[in-house]
Image (tube, rainbow, N blue to C red; front, side, top):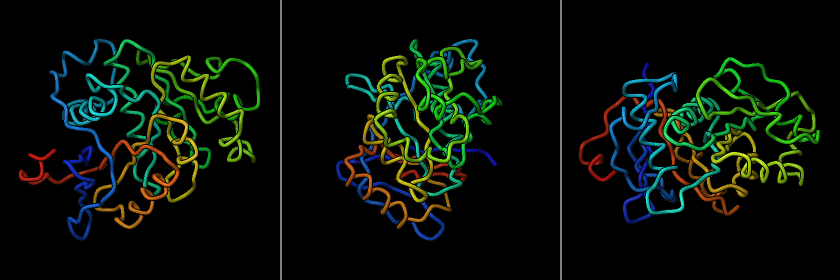
Length: 262
């Protein structure tokens, strides 16, 4: 099964188009980015990136990167949280691929941060060990870059979740975490943070309030509209900027009438 994506768009009102297993009913209340013209992939993906995706998947992720991080003539987000509406939506996969493509398109550094202490997965995406990571950085005093690992993709770094810690959840809302977040922003040009699903915890909300915004990952034909609506309401109440929703594992074509509005 191929992985396809769509960054659901806002057209003049707070309404998004979202397909489910039952009916094509809109989810209301999402802020989203306008569609962007795409440059040829050979012009934006740098030689030597060794990306793990190609073809349609690469094109879809490149569109997402353009619409979220590389908007011309505006202050584009630099620090973004990724979270699934529910568990199992493929958030870690999406976050990892976005970081790879972003690193291939910009001259600055990109750092992936695994803040999913409940079910860390970014280390598996890049086949590296999960140790000496974020939990360790929250307990120790060395500079944050000493805990991050340089990956094979140029300009891309990974801060794994780190050693197991029974108090890890409380650390995310600590002054120490706020200090480390400031350090990450100063050390890296872009910071992408993978978090537990919005239905499992408020970790994404806590971190989202100190970043430029949050991208919510939905799973085609699986994510429930009511769960997504509730998640959006909670994010807005916490003053978290919702940058958009990614429809993951979309295997059906978008109707032309809808696609023309994106």
